Image 1 (cartoon, rainbow, N blue to C red):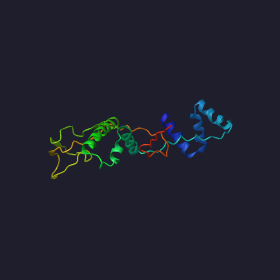
Image 2 (tube, rainbow, N blue to C red):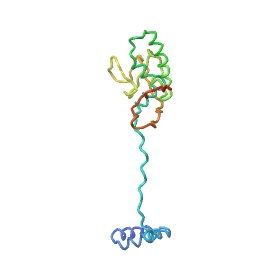
Image 3 (cartoon, one colour):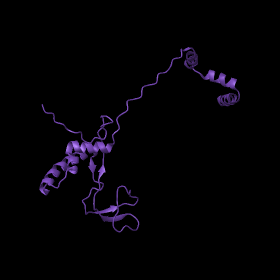
Image 4 (tube, helix red, strand yellow):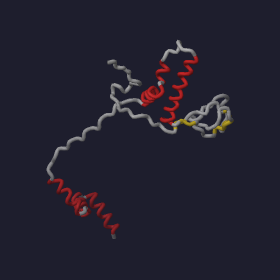
Length: 185
């Protein structure tokens, strides 16, 4: 019986607008029935648009990484410095500290780990269906996988990416290291 009533109500509402209104009114709960009348009698108010959230200054992750490497390891200073006036021993001593501190930054931000956890020179097998983003094949590449070869480089994979969030101004978004000025009294 309910199925018959539902089918009749469906076709009545589909082809007769007065029947559709009566069916809609019958289906409303008491709270829903009062809602349209309350909306009709409610005073019209102008909606104030919500203020847009403040725009965050734009800074690329690449500049943030470079700025972090400079701030914590003096990386840019070492690379940009003319090394002609220094001996190999002096360059090596300076590079040792910079490289150690750069490694610390990379470990903290990316947690780098080898793609293949084997020693370089070890025999490895590249499986069928391998991802070309994880393995680069060199040498005599022919035939069908799995491929067997010698590990030349174990690769690196970031297990996380926790870049510092930029909170500075748009004007300073590309500044890798601010100019330092020592004031004299």
